[in-house]
Length: 382
Ligand SMILES: O=C(O)C(=O)C[C@]1(C(=O)O)C=C[C@@H](O)C=C1
Image (cartoon, rainbow, N blue to C red; front, top):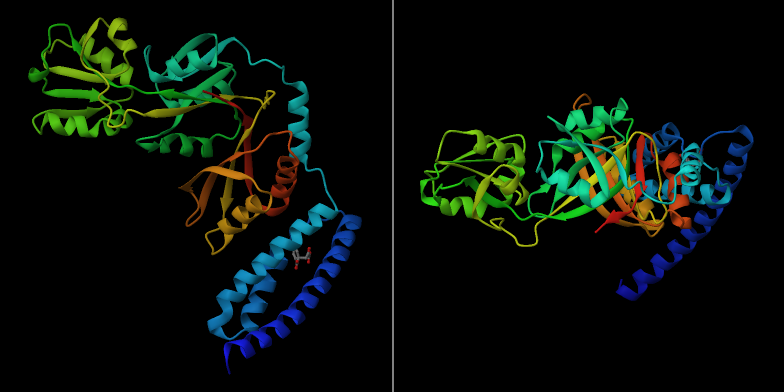
């Protein structure tokens, strides 16, 4: 048989499929109506699982996985069709609309803000970008920043989320998973220029040990490698804490990698400037609060979704974003510590909170995902 003949055969089969698809969607519309009357949700995971098992059992083994992919897509389309026909404003949509109505138009110029570290930390510089007059309170760990806003001790918390050179701050993603009563209300990008700082009179060639935060150490790896193996690199809690420790030390052979503001703050000297591997070194910080606040102009949305470890589960969510034309700007995955072989996926999406796609995504997610957490919608201060 030649190609032309084979294609004619495919065309005939596709005609049958087109009719079957239209018939199926017609029944789906009636299912949707029946569900509306009975107050049932669109998504029925048990029904989908049973159908997938049935379809796999009816296909030759070598086609089972293709059948699985095809029917997963059909369920996806079917749910999208049902949701469009029978829009059910989700509880989340109501919560978001309530927050949009009650949030003031202007982001507060001053507030008590929790930061990890000590004075001079990069988080402090981020706070100063986010708020005009922040009253910064310093905490020993990122975990305490979450606790400070959860127990009402501070209005907001500022945390580093990702760096353009060293990547995600994984600890923050893990903490976001453990803390459920916080929302992201703003973000900012800070250009990070690292400096090698030491006590006045210290010479670069005398340095035997350098202290800093692991992220800063990783961002300056090329510079540190050039200094040679004799220089010990010691990670510590925070870049500013490293600078403070160097200032308080009796030793004349230690230095820290820290921000320029630490030089004046701790009476230090700058031995080298801009020592990061890349000149365009940026860190993104998020600002969290206890309650959901959505300020005018919010065009980023963050979500966390727990997905079962089975083929296609991430694909289903991504297909939904794609179908709605939403731009995915960040995807991070973390293993769930107490659930074997299950993962948390963190998404940042770019879409205005006033757009139809946003509203549809909010309603759809409740219907598509078994478990997800809406982390907030916000704008980024550049
Ligand atoms: O049977 C249902 O409850 C439907 O809504 C139909 C359908 C399908 O397309 O087969 C779609 C969504 C559900 O999650 C399960 C199945």
